[in-house]
Image (cartoon, rainbow, N blue to C red; front, top):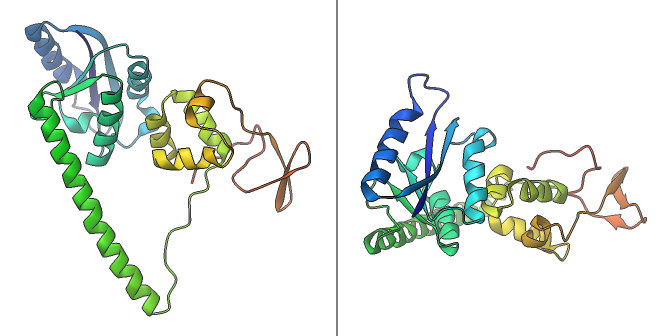
Length: 239
């Protein structure tokens, strides 16, 4: 069985050496008679997704089904939050890829017990989300009663940036992490143009090139376009 090994150390801690993690991972594979497909190593903080190049490559290889198992030393070497972990593992599960953490051995989707624990984590995350939602609704009710405005500015990531991220990673999970948005937002944003992530990744759809003309934008054929576009060659980051 082909296994991908992932190790990460923070650039903030110069004492850390990824070999400490890799040694334990290699030993486990040897004992379990697993074949190591590739070792992916990052030297970056967990939230510094732009510099986690090895993690991005692992996601691309997972999409191509290059291996059957992803093995890490600890969960926090790979994921920043429970929600991110669940989203990623669900995506891998759809591709027939399982996951194991050496230190948190209950997180092992190669076993029935591990899959059960994953479902428990998902349920806990859903409960947490529900409780947060209730607190937010109570807060909104109070703010409205006081006559104050509330809420964050809606996301309006340029569709060109969405397409760039999808083509760069060939994977919606990684693209969403780079853009700091949800997978649902990407589907919704592309749906406004009658397309979807798969068509963008496989090159069947390209975003229209837009020329900025004051407060309103027009495409090359003169049709007015909504906000969320940038002139080709001057692409900005997502909000």
